[in-house]
Image 1: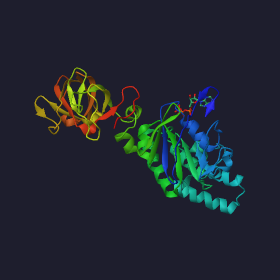
Image 2: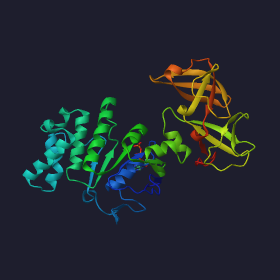
Image 3: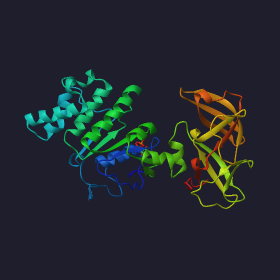
Image 4: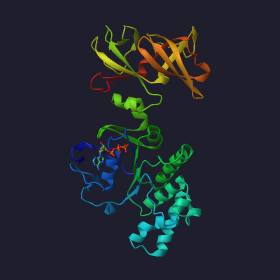
Amino acid sequence: MRFGDVTAVDRLDAVIESGELVALLGPSGCGKTTTLFLLAGLYRPTAGVIRFDGAVVNDVPPERREIGMVFQNYALYPHMTAFDNIAFPLKVQKIPKNRRREMVLEMARLVRIESLLERKPAQLSGGQQQRVAIARALVKRPKLLLLDEPLSNLDARLRLEMREEIRRIVSNVGITTVFVTHDQEEAMSLADRILLMREGRKVQCDAPDMLYLRPAHRFVAEFLGNPPINLLSARVGAGGRCLLLNGGTPLTDLPEDIEPLPPETPVVVGIRPEDFRLEAAGVALGDPSACRGKIAGRVAVRETTGRETLLRVETCAGAVRVLAPTGKAPHPGTAVVLTVEPSALHLFHPETGESLR
Ligand code: ATP
């Protein structure tokens, strides 16, 4: 999809199955909203095809696509009550009044706003307005529900509540749903699959666990995870199975599912902060590991978030982030030793960023 010289969405090839809840995730400007608007029929693709149930819909206008859409700001009619907002699409379709009432009440029950139907949007909280907007989008029984940043206008507590609510509502109706978000946690917790985009292209489309555990590209590994993954420059050692950090410190063996690589091959090694094992001052804090390499370091910064503590450890390979249980997290200045299991490593090509696993 091009806007003049800008290619907003580029050869995005994806199949969304019936009943799936899919998140379009990626940094600002990567083409999420454009993709959603293409699905809605608000934009016509400048190249390529969009199919619904096998039929090309490029020229089908939005009102004939059997789609329900909830915009980021909910776009409720301010002068109408919640009831009239939900009933509006049915009125346009000239559905008789009694039937309309039945359908609105059914939706109101589903989204749990039966007692609020006579209120106008200004008399509703953000979460309640969103429920009205979802009810309005679903009342015509569309085949596809599109949500644009559904939780971004809600405060932190409501966001958690509405996350569960959206999951409950869409699985109750069994509707195929696509939602846009730039929030990895929201995508991870809500979606069956995440379509991660960068600069208009698909980088990976997979279940949240798979994206986290088996990132296909360095970009995926960096985008998902909080605190972020550590990326270290390394090279393959003499036997083809050992990884050496800059300076020659052995890190660990290559994971078993990787064929030996030629000695001296440069690789970028990704290690999640929770995958380091930590030993300090001769006292083993984790299980003594079978790894061959041990990285010596010193704790520079310690930030407690409650159950877990994030450490910044200065090592010969640079500063790394390490997550440790708070009760066992050493204080700044403590000398520590880090080890990592080969199976926890993510390996990327230093130039293309593609995963080597
Ligand atoms: P955000 O998270 O910031 O909302 P996004 O991932 O939804 O971003 P899009 O809004 O789809 O990104 O925009 C993708 C690219 O296309 C951006 O470079 C944007 O500037 C450009 N773009 C989007 N809409 C238009 C338009 N109507 N005219 C020109 N360029 C556009």
